[in-house]
Length: 123
Picture 1 (cartoon, helix red, strand yellow):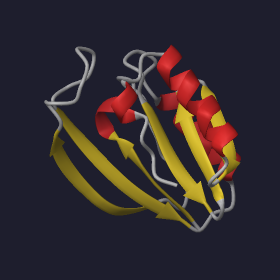
Picture 2 (cartoon, rainbow, N blue to C red):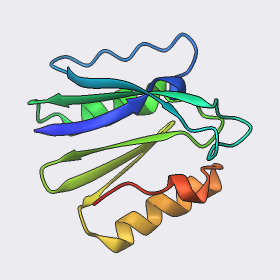
Picture 3 (cartoon, rainbow, N blue to C red):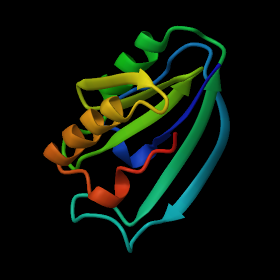
């Protein structure tokens, strides 16, 4: 099973994200005004999802195609023992707990402007 989330505001204007078999688990609105950059809004819509598909690559690529390139946006999800971190046009896949894989994704996030405190996905 794949579980993850996407922040609604991280999607490019006009982007459509509709992978088959995705089920919404929860939608919530968060006031994150104390921890965002100028390129990010104060309120975020968090869409948590799950799917039974085993098409990790398809889901990751679909997300990489719709995420906004500006502002350091990313999303992440788990598929079994694997962590997948997705930026606009870039996907990182590594075993959960793999510090080298995590460090590579974090370094990339820094390079595209993701605030340090937002590079905090759980293992």
